[in-house]
Length: 108
Length: 108
DNA sequence: CCGTATCCTTCACGATACTG
DNA sequence: CAGTATCGTGAAGGATACGG
Image 1 (cartoon, rainbow over the protein chains, first blue to last red):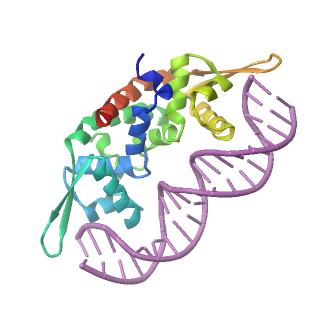
Image 2 (cartoon, rainbow over the protein chains, first blue to last red):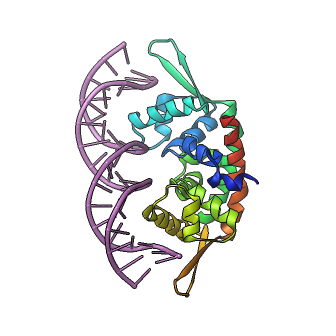
Image 3 (cartoon, chains in turn brown, purple, red, orange):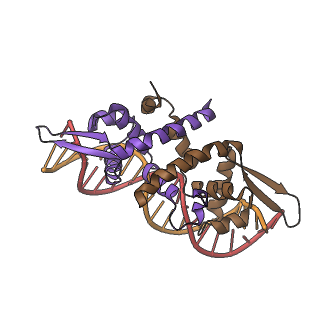
């Protein structure tokens, strides 16, 4: 009995993963944050073409709540905020990379 | 330049993958079909607790269109329909398994 | 048995304006 | 600079009944 039986289980880990990274801008945000190592709010918004403040900030909150990114606020004037990937996010990256490679086959 | 730059790219493969498997019942359907090897419509619906006909059938159509499952109709009376994973789906499975294992850490 | 047709609801996503 | 507040919309998801 492996994870392939997850549909029969009470709580499916795969479904849980999709909740974490399934939101519309989630994977783009994770890619951008990981790629940058550390990135500020407006810089991030610039990389994600077309995302609005409401959507970006709520996605960031969720990702932080779910332990994928870390928010650090520097008490300067004006305030500076940086987002970083957590260790948990870094363990996720190779999987996303595999998924990306898999999907790339389709797009050729 | 790896896939980590995907937010800057015109078309992000990772985003494409999420479109394929990001729908609400998508991964459960894939798990159930792969686990069964071959499964009929009503049996599948039975495994997915709470899914309605409208939702299940539209998800199945999308998965078939996207080359992840295969639909086979047997011209019997009453009609019998079986769903099978494609080869493309089987190459995806290890990735989903990795993702599932990753998510399981969170749930402990 | 395997779905479609129809109608309904919800909420994720988004545009815009404004604030500590 | 880094967000909130507010309001709006459409598409995804869903319940129910019916059809080939």
